[in-house]
Image 1 (tube, helix red, strand yellow):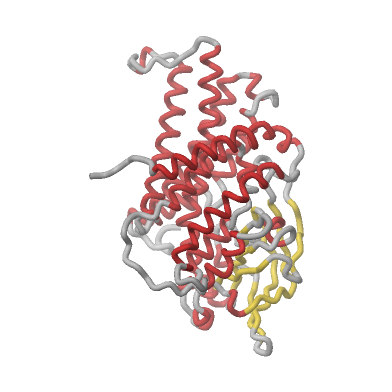
Image 2 (image 1 turned 135 degrees about the vertical axis):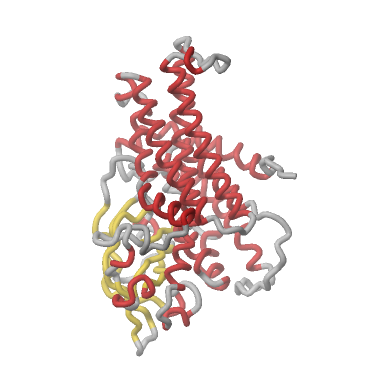
Length: 421
């Protein structure tokens, strides 16, 4: 029998997260949107202890032998791992509060996802344990370049091994890095940087390296001014002869010596967990807009009559029902992709499906919300126009809608990357 009940510990977590979203996020949405890059300090301080607890639970299986060396023996799976599900529910609720502030969450975020997907157990403990102690820290991932967006094979950032010091030397520039400044300049965080050890090898030469906070040679090339999620930290990073310890290559050290695509494939697993997270954020924004419009219309005496056939509904009622349908479809796909992670199953197809559908849905829902609210919806008196601006990024980052459509089509039809571009 399939159990669709949400575990009790997630229900309890949601009560706390809802309080944070309502009291520490939503009241500051407009202020932080108007003052881009202003740090949501109240939100950071309130959520850091919670992040520490989450990371402690996540790392506990790797540290149960008492010395924290990350070499815990493999154990038989005794049931689903609900940590991913707990994170997805948290992201949805925090994004309902404010998506820009959510992206300032002191958490390993995409950098942590990359470490967990491609790193050894020892690396996971070494790099992520810092998020269980001390002051707030952030994680980031640097992959996009000016000439290498969706086509990662044209990546120009290089990693060269110094035979004398046995260190990797990184050179290049990455753009559109969420929490890049927070991770490397303002805290003892981590940033997972994708670079090529052999430009002639294409994707096979691409590897992932962990650059730690305050590493010499890393500088902020640009701090982005954005359409939406304006409270978040988005930067371009310049790497000038940045020396990284040999063991900071994610995965086993031998991988870097082989002309295979294993390193790239291992790093790509990051997206299988990060795309449902982006979809959850999109659904949080969509729910915020949908609930607000329904409440506003109800104040005007307009409520949807679900007992009527479609041809007897007003245009407004049909729009609301379509908004609800798109929201539910996106959210259920997100939960499905997350459930597969919880059960240790591959979710490559479902991760792209939920990311594509959620990004498209939130863009349409928030635009429709502004439309239904009329001139007030377009004004800054309400948050509707902000939600519309916040929404669009979910259709772009972690793989654009078009890229995810390609992944879905290739998976369903059985085509390779070369056969379907």
